[in-house]
Each structure stands twice: as C-alpha cells, then as structure tokens.
Length: 405
Image (tube, rainbow, N blue to C red; front, side, top):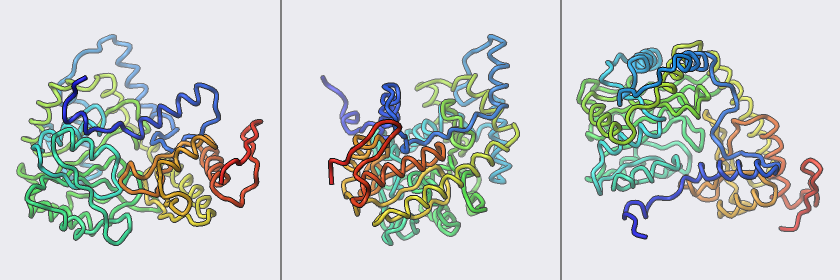
C-alpha cells in the first residue's frame, strides 16, 4: 500500500495507546493500575453539565462558526482578561476541538516545509509529530545543566536561520516543572527580538502547587499590537477535568487567527455546539472545582514523591504542578520501554516510557488518579524492581511470584 512520505514519519501517540491498553486489560477484569494517564478523576463542573443539558433539551443542535460560538469566545475573552490581564477582541480568539487541535492548526498556519520548531526536552509526545505533519523539522532542546528547567542560552544555541517558532509548555508535561519567571521573561523578549513565533502551551497553568502563581507571558512582551507573534493556548480538559469534551482555544493576532480559522474550517468546521456550551458553563461558573482539583493533585503528588523516595537509586525532581512526575529509573533499567513493558507484564502497572518524551531512562508517572492507585501502583513497582523485596506479592486474591531478577 502506498502512503505519503509525511505519514511514514509519524509515530503512534504513546499515551493514547497506553490508555487503550489499560482499557482492554480492565475490560478483561485484570487489576491494572493506570499511572500513565492524564485524566483526573474529579467530576465535571456542575455548570458545564447543566448548560449542556439545557441545550440538549431544546433539540437545536446545529453547526457552529469555524472559530467558535460567540458565547464561548466571550468567555475566553473574559478568562484572558482575568488570568492574563490582557484585553483582546473576538477576532483574536479561536476555539478548537481541544488544545491539541489549536496547536496543530497554529503550526500549520506558520510553518513551511524544512523550517524548524524548537521546544525544550523533555517534551509532550505530540510536539515532534505535529511539526513533522507540517513537513517541518522538530528541534528538541535539552538543558545543558541536566535539569528540567531550560535556560535562554539552551534555546539560543539551537536557533538557526531555519527557526520559525518555539513552543513552551510550563508547567511541563511530563516533568511537572514550572519554568522560572526569569526564563519566561527571557524567552518572550528573545522571540520578539528574533521575530520568532512563541507558542505558550498553558494548559496546566492553574494546576500548580505550594502557593505558586501562574506566570503571565504578556507581562514581558514589548509588542502587543497586531504584529505580535505570541500565541497562548489553553482549554478546559485539564483544569476543569473535562478531558472528553475536547474544547481548547488559541489567542493570537487577528491575521493569524483568521488563517487558523480558515484551516480549521476545512479540517473539522467548528467544534460541537454542545461541547462549546459546556465549556462556557465551566469558564463562567464557580471556580471552586479547579481549586479542589489542585489541592487533590498536590496531596497525591506528595504521596507519590514520598513513596518514590523510598526506592534505592531512583532520582526524582518533585513536580511544581500538572498531573505528572518524571523519575529516573535508569538505576534499574536504562531502556525505559523495556522497563514499562516489565511493569505492565509482571505487576500490571501502566507507565509511559521516558524515551517518548525525549529522555531515556525515565518513566512518566501520573498522580491524577486515586490515592489508592498511587500507593498500590508504586508498591507494585517497588516489589517488581527491588531485589530485596519479598518473593511473593498478593494482588487481591492473586499471588504473584518473582521469577525474574
């Protein structure tokens, strides 16, 4: 079968594949624990449910504008004013089928074949594939100091005449690292000076811990007129636990939004009106669910970090936010894919290999499930990896016996 050159370069989403694997195992009745996902267990805000039900009861479910319904754009404008102190107009906003689509459409709007897009390592698994789908070249940038916190000089060294854009995801998936205010200031001003697009993937910006406050990229921009190449991406999936609603958005200059809307109009048309109405309800509703989720995540993080610190040889940088931590398990196995396969096969714990995020030897572990999942999942992992563990482990009434070293 003949397929396109671009299609041959694209890998399957590792995280989506693992979600599928976990679902199949659970369907079979296996006691699998999913520490690889990015889907909080908390309920969707009641305002989202009520708004959706109200629309469904009318029976009027129709097409929407390619850039989003006016009510959602108005809610995003208010959100941008409240959380970024930035006043924008409807023409500066495009709603999408998730933040992922907003990023993809943005990249299609700005990248030409063979141009480069930079992003720090570790990175979200989809960034390289999205760039390749545009015929462009992904350029991961690994911090030279070995931390999860990039410095401006790391980016500077990789910029070339082909560089067109930089993506910054802070707090970061998979590490949970929240980049410093100094770095955000530096990268905003650097991209302005170099006339580069800067895509701020802020999908986790309110899910941060220990009293930290979100960092506002607009604060450091010298140019906020319609020539600005600063693009802010956000959505309802993470902060409102509305992963299945698939509503995200982009805020950018009017011309870029116009082009992005044209592309999206031919790809998918506008997002479902039902899902957009739900997003309106969540954004305009009481925000206590976000605070509750953040506190739950912080508590779960503390439990996971405490359990992981009991492992001999595991290196861990405690996450500043998000749902994830990214410990280094290379003491046990340098090949993260082999390690993830071992844990799934032997103790039925789903993890994500670090190589998928650009850094071998690590695993991405999620703490957005229950405390029981976190504690039991880490307990199983320790039993599987620690040679000093007892020879037997019970999962429910099932006895496991160590037959490996």
